[in-house]
Image (cartoon, rainbow, N blue to C red; front, side, top):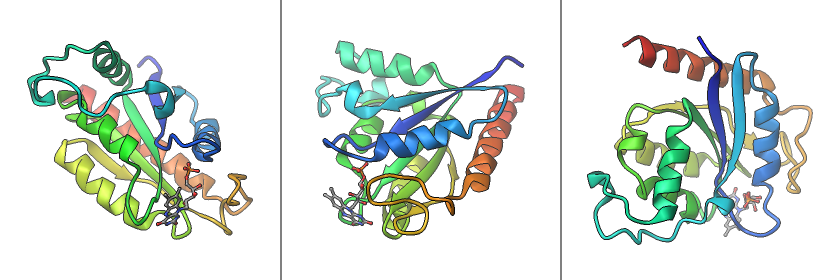
Length: 181
Ligand SMILES: Cc1cc2nc3c(=O)[nH]c(=O)nc-3n(C[C@H](O)[C@H](O)[C@H](O)COP(=O)(O)O)c2cc1C
């Protein structure tokens, strides 16, 4: 099998965010045989649902939607790094999901939360979104400020590297199962 392409999504977009540091750490734990890219939603620049037709039709007219669709289709699986904002997930990542439709169906997607409580609320709510769009959802470990991560985004020694490696293994298995089906 050729190497699998896995995108590591930064789902925060504010200035001075730590999301890119978390995504970088996750990308460095990728196993042999995978090719990983960091996908920064701040650089994707999607407008808020500006298409005339519903995403479910697949009739995309805006270059930004077409480019996002092609970008997502270029990956075998994603890992979404997810902070918690006021007990929920960032609007930018919901918009990125809502802007497409068929692209998510059957796509293996892992989630790694980070926050004071490892983003447990955000991960739970976002899981419902991922289930609705029919991804193959795999919940990864969460990173807790003060234990695994500093509030400035420095990854600490206790960070769950083995659990992240385990998430990669599950994603690779899910991709292989999909290809074999
Ligand atoms: C608007 C906002 C709301 C937040 N609410 C929470 C929260 O409910 N729970 C939590 O653990 N952290 C919360 N935080 C702190 C974030 O976990 C922390 O700022 C983290 O770095 C956010 O990720 P980012 O830097 O990639 O944007 C909040 C931060 C912001 C900006």
